[in-house]
Each structure stands twice: as structure tokens, then as C-alpha cells.
Image (cartoon, rainbow, N blue to C red):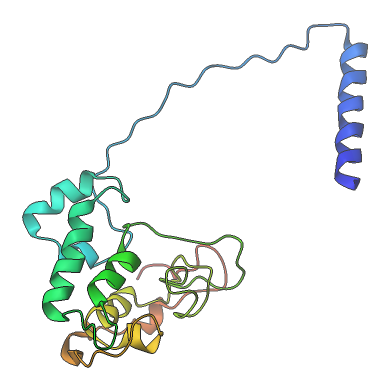
Length: 194
């Protein structure tokens, strides 16, 4: 109600000023031409395309809409099924689970949620640290992705049952975050380059 009254008051003031001015109060706008862009890279989920997709398919994938790249989706499931075959006995299908989590290749954020950003937060129901999604500067997205593919991440998050097919030597890139690159308290949240 308060917001509506303010708008009404501002509208009445504008009408009154226009009536007193005696001149033309027409608003002139210049039409804006539609903008086009050329997409040269599709990289919301670092290492996913590089890990799963054949290199010859990268250019096609890069030019595709993030939700229209069936090649990537098919290759995520195919490679994962080869490494971690579905097991009906325990109800696991890591290939299908990863294809649904890592595809489409776009950053998802649920703006109705509060809290810090968390890589794969929306896709895992908050199991990676929060339901907001997006990506925090301190998220190690490569290790999170590798842990989901080769490790026990999906079982630990209760997204898939344990299949005992982990390959722990491939669950990390063994690159720690540089402490001098930790985020700051003010935008853009990064330290100046050295």
C-alpha cells in the first residue's frame, strides 16, 4: 500500500508539473537495433566438456545453446557408464545422474534462496553447501566435478547409492587454491593481481 501511494504521489506531481510547464512534454526515444553475438566458448562447468566430450566435438558444442547440446549429454552418460556401469542390484546409474547434474552447461542459481553461492547447489538440493547455486570464488569446481565423476561425492550427497567403483587417484587435480587469491570482503571480491 505504501509503495502504491508513493507512485500515485509521484504520478500526480509529474502531471502537475507538465500542466504548469505549458510546453510539449513528449518523450523521445531512439530505437535500439537488436544485438547479436557470436558464442565462442561454452564453459559454465569447467572441465566437464574437456573430460567427457571428444575433442572433435568441441567446436560444435561451443556454438550450441547450453540446453541444446545433446552430444555432450550423451557423452557424459556414455563415458560414465563405461567407467561406472549401472548396477541394478543397488539401484545406481551414475551416468544418468551425472548427465542430469552436469547438463545443461549453464550456471544455475535459485534467486529465491538465501545464503552463499555453492557450485552445483541447485542440482544437488543444497548438498554441496547451499541451495542458492551459482559458484563461490572459493569453490574448487574442478575437484567438485572430478569427485562427482570418479569419487564417492554422489553417494556422500545421497544422490546415488554407493557403487564401490571410485578411482580416488582421479578425484582431484592436486592444485590447491593460492591463499593470496582468497576473496576479499568488497566487490569484486578478488585481490589485485601481483
